[in-house]
Image (cartoon, rainbow, N blue to C red; front, side, top):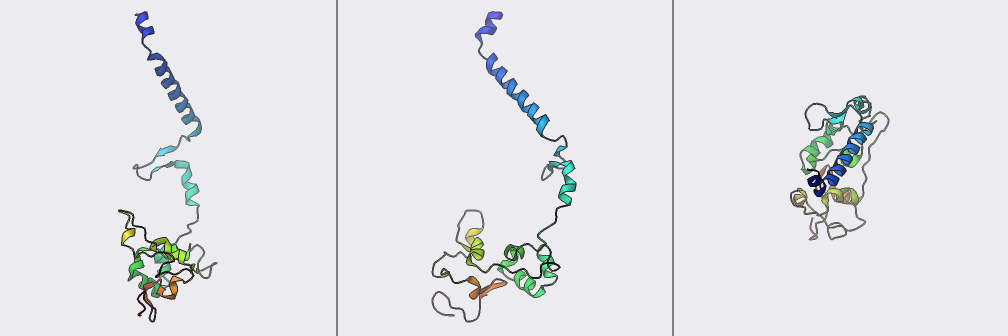
Length: 170
């Protein structure tokens, strides 16, 4: 029997696997908190139980469009009736934290890059980006240096009265 054990070369790899496994378990017990695990169902419930109070003390920076609509009802209704209804106000205006108490006005950036975040033509399969009206930066529809808001109101993105189309008409 002893000669059979020496002839089989599987003892060394088995020993390496057992040592690696022991090292992993030792690492886990030393560096991963004991309260880390699944609390509740699996989806979004893998966390450290003692961390709940830390997260509850974090100040929410984004308020949501309903918060904005409670004061800005005209713009809220306009956006909700148009193609930008799927976009939160704070995507363009920035976080609403402190508004209106300490931050009086949330002025959005007026650069083309703000609109390009969604409207540059990127036809990724299955992403939904191919159904958005895409523009080519610097192209005939979006000449560099001319801001989008000169022809489009972001709260009602159709062309503004008197704006010129690519064909030259209004």
